[in-house]
Image (cartoon, rainbow, N blue to C red; front, top):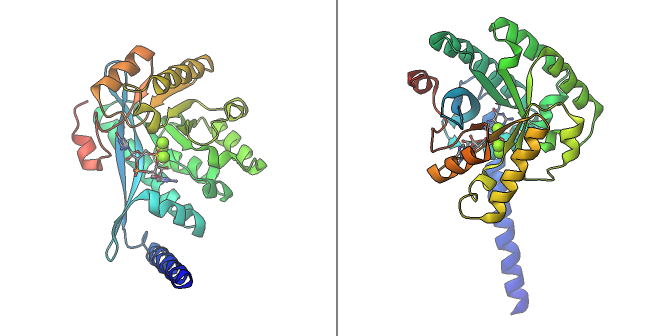
Length: 275
Ligand code: C2E
Ligand code: MG
Ligand code: MG
Ligand code: MG
């Protein structure tokens, strides 16, 4: 009896593993050629000043729509793109699209918006990354200071010197550097000391709790104070309610983004927003 149920458990487990492996295999297979088939689209989530909700820029967020698999979320496909190395050409595509769009957006509204682009660890192993960014900025006539590169601790954790060197070169170009998802992971203050960050983004999971949860509220307040004393701009991610926005105003948070203000939008939608 025990043996039978043991075997059942075992075969259930392999079935599940099988499904996961199959899905992964399909995603990998479809991801090759997805760029050429134009299946990726960059969406843009506007970023607002906390004080009076003026748009100051947007974060580029990648979307993938595949003929056979449908819409796949970045949380599912980015890790696979990382693993296969396909994030290198895909990431370059995002940078090119985002800067090309930024040029159009700045021109249309005659405003000096900025654009944030997420970079994952594998992209730093591309020895051409810095030059690609440099030449794309030039090609699209965008000032380096309007490009904000978002990285998570995962990029810095290996402590590899080529990462430090790439970041130094990017900073020399005048590009801005943001620490993304702060508060998740190790939140090592050492990274804030060692790397030339301009911006710190407080993770959505903390923002969610600020109106109900005293510890979350205190942590966010303290993070904002610490960031400001280090000279960092603070961005709140995932602002969904007016209560959260009001609290962030009281706390002196600089920038916010979230469903309360706007979801990630297509270029056409973003260009239609009032200035
Ligand atoms: P992230 O950089 O932390 O981006 C924020 C995520 O929160 C986005 O999810 C955004 O759509 C979502 N979000 C924004 N406001 C709200 C809100 O009010 N409520 C809720 N529930 N969610 C909100 P998304 O677009 O699914 O992206 C997930 C992650 O995938 C990103 O997290 C980023 O790490 C990664 N990613 C997305 N695009 C790219 C890319 O082009 N390159 C790389 N390397 N990573 C990317
Ligand atoms: Mg981000
Ligand atoms: Mg984030
Ligand atoms: Mg994230």
